[in-house]
Amino acid sequence: DADVTQTPRNRITKTGKRIMLECSQTKGHDRMYWYRQDPGLGLRLIYYSFDVKDINKGEISDGYSVSRQAQAKFSLSLESAIPNQTALYFCATSDAGPWDQPQHFGDGTRLSIL
Amino acid sequence: AQRVTQPEKLLSVFKGAPVELKCNYSYSGSPELFWYVQYSRQRLQLLLRHISRESIKGFTADLNKGETSFHLKKPFAQEEDSAMYYCALPPDSGAGSYQLTFGKGTKLSVIP
Image 1 (tube, rainbow over the protein chains, first blue to last red):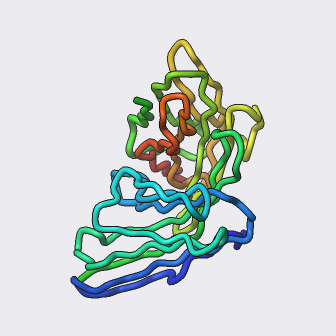
Image 2: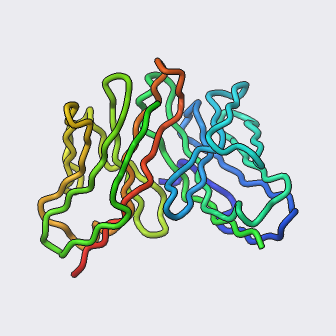
């Protein structure tokens, strides 16, 4: 299922660099999400967007920013990367309507900050 | 506040043995719970949801409102079941929450 596509799949960069992770979807979903996954901590929500004009902070938004360029695109930026942002990042989408919609995930971006 | 607890970080069972992955929750209303599975180096996939009452890959989960649990069960474990399993609660818009709440996950290891 390549309906939710994340680029790049892997990235290694240095402390202080600006990084953008991109997510695009062909599912036609209004709602999009960015999570990070860390061993022992599970998934934590960074930002979410319910439509192009609606952006909301999640549980751990500090150090991150997002842009919803279109219904199909939701980008995550690290303005000045630091080593503790090393993690696996997932984008997800869900349909509008009842809040109990399942979420559909991308393959993830493995980010390493040196 | 809504919360999901998966008490076991790691669960190891032998092939053919029964499996039970525990999930307990706190929620203000009547929840629609999910189980997601993540195989090695793959994306999270929806395994099953409470409302559908389906059996997917031999797994079932029953919502027990009295015990506030949604444990995932399979009578006979297979090696291909080895993965990370996440229990999740949907947003509780009535409480002003619009976030899917995940447990911290349980890594299931099936020993051949």
